[in-house]
Length: 143
Image (cartoon, rainbow, N blue to C red; front, side, top):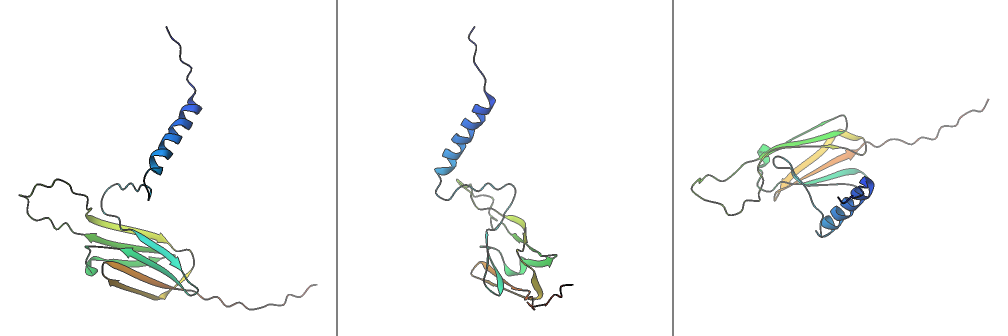
């Protein structure tokens, strides 16, 4: 009978190295999605605003709803399946459909009364004005 030495820490390290090698073979990394459609977005800022661009190809403007509460912006909507002909047999189907909801914690406080949104060419652009805090110098008396 042959006895093998089992070293759990070494096995985990080997698995980790193999997974990293596998993921590094993909130029843009891997994104795993469970469930339905989840749109991709960019979150950026300039001096005065938070800027968000959300890719929503195939989604109608009317099916998108925006809300904000406690510095969390929520984007909800639905990408409807346009496949009506059930006689067609697909060889490959990679497009995702369904309801989606993305909630984004904003990095700074924003003015909820000063938010702009436009939907153009399948991209939802949202601009949220930052709350401008006044910086006043206060002299503190030393006692």
